[in-house]
Length: 144
Image (cartoon, rainbow, N blue to C red; front, side, top):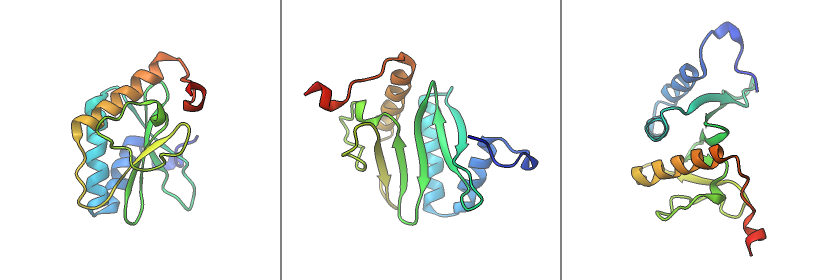
């Protein structure tokens, strides 16, 4: 998908930083903290801004051989959606949203929530490993 109009002359990373700053509250702090953890877990992650429309500033996306996760902010939640989250081990039970889907899983973070940083980084690393393996995983239904 195209980045915002080229006349802005800003990279996706710069636009994501601007978006985080514009939030100006706990959501910006939270999204910024999670962004930092993603980059710590995978320094080679590529930041992109996707699904940009005139009515939407777009969605931050972190990729490495495919989408790892997206970061969205809503009025009362910051949502990190892992593209292949259903195939990731989550012993810390960070996934608390989109649990019924066959592929995606999400972490909804509300104001004041603490996120286990090492468990989150482990999810990011697993997402990268899955993307890099090039092997599609069978659905959970197929395993039953």
